[in-house]
Amino acid sequence: MSENKNTHEADLLVIDDDLAVSELFELYAEEIGFTATRKSFTATDGLKSLPDSSLKLIVLDLGLPDRDRERVLEEFLKSAGDTPIAVVTADDQVETAVKCMREGAFDFMAKPLSPARILSLLSHAMNDYRYRRLIMNDSVRQRSPAFSKIITAAPLMETLFLAVERLAPSPQPVLITGESGTGKELIARAVHDLSSRPGKFVPVNVAGLDGSMFSDTLFGHVKGAYTGAESSRPGLAKRAEGGTLFLDEIGDLNIESQVKLLRFLQENEYYPLGTDQPEKSSCRVVLATHVDLFEAVRQKKFREDLYYRLAAHSVIIPPLRERPGDLPLLVDHFLREASLSLNIPAVKIDKNFIPALSSYEFPGNIRELSAIITGAASAASDGRLSTVYLHDYMKRHKNAEKTLQGCPDYHNELDGRLLTLSELEEMHVSEALRRTDYNQSAAAALLGISQSTISRRFQHLMHNA
Image 1 (cartoon, rainbow, N blue to C red):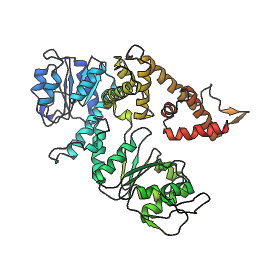
Image 2: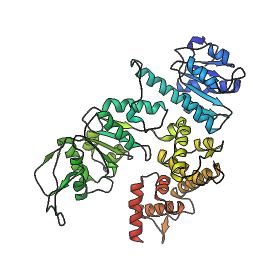
Image 3: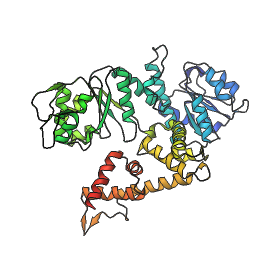
Image 4: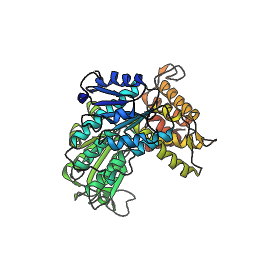
């Protein structure tokens, strides 16, 4: 791929006075599917290429010799039309990143650039281009207020929002999958808000609700159904009449409860405990799980008929590591939240904090990022987020991963025998709690599980202590 091709064929424009940067992008762009790269070394030359409807991405250096770095992005945004602009700069201050993202930049990268970061940007830009082609017949697309609590500028998320808008009016169940901490309940609430249903949004975490407890929670009971049932009580399905019943962590249900759920979804009716008279339901059901249900079906831990009943309307939330451009926005948001909750003055960010954060995989996703920023803010004795706290956190997590993989300091054996999976899990949870000073939220983030799950594990540990 070369700029010697006709300029009208170029779909990637790199504007940087450093030739090495342009050549790096040109080297990797073809792998992603870009056809040709045009290089410009000044803002004046770059602007001559605009507007160009063939461009899929513009890469813009803020430190161009013929423009004021404070105004150059604004100038290009006015001339670029709908073409996304990714900012490249030697200034790695988080304040610069936040300012650029708020002005409308597609992504922000600090020099020196890594091949992995370039490939990630180019991949996201290509996804964004395909998304814009998908909705090009829409006159003007504005993000629905239903997504107002979701902080993102990622095209992957915009594609997700479009899918949610399309399936929201349907009465059929919706399955939301994604890793722990990605915000599945926020998407479930958006489904409800976009459905225009007059009833309530009723959430319930069904992990651990098995047998009669599952039935009683969802379907209620009549007086005398069991010892202690001195009066009738409607279940959550009744409370969600005309609205949405959100069942979180359905991948943790046992087979018996899965059978009851399948009947509820198929027949739109249920039996309160203690009666053989069915009640009809008009609620819409949205379900979520971090479990790979297809693999669970293969292992016979999840019913195949229930899986295919849910597969018709499903959305997958991408993990945070696939949305690196969202980091500056999320850090800024969580830092403001931390300042308020901790009642401390506004905290600034060390210039190396975001680059260091970008190297982390975030197994706990956005929930974990929130915990990291809160912890870093509380430890910021000089009024600035330091990479010292971050590096210590990342080191502890990497040690936990090594422990799980069986490094020498992990006691996999007891009296010459291998530990059972139950014993191994108990030891691992105990270690996570110890390393986080028994902060259940932090331990859950460390393990990549929900807080409710670790709360149950903690109660089990205390009971067996």
